[in-house]
Length: 181
Image (cartoon, rainbow, N blue to C red; front, side):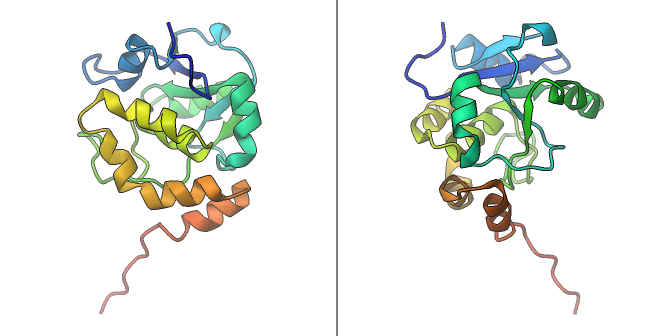
């Protein structure tokens, strides 16, 4: 049974490549926050696919499509990621998440090394459902820190109008290389 009052339906294509004890996608499914799918054929078409290889950024332009069809994350090994995303891009609308910092225990402080949970939190926040984003962060002790650590960029991305505007704002948060003295 999935939670009812959320703006977005969340789905995960799961390839069983992970440690089940650390898998945020499995916990999201178990607690009713997301549907877990292990076969591509089970997935409804035209969802917003959170795809790190996409040329276009997720932005508020995607709200109506995400409301209608839902948001899809992929939980797979990085070894097979490009192949998985290529396949799923044929039937879904690919969008990359803009620059945010991970807070999960494995990749704390690393840009874009997100768990499935963090990817969904960033996506629903950017698409305007702050309540659903906050609700998602309640499932781990560490996860509320994702919103705290990324508050300013997420708010800037949420108030952008287009993908181009999100990308423009994103460059304000990417650390610049320091010149050597």
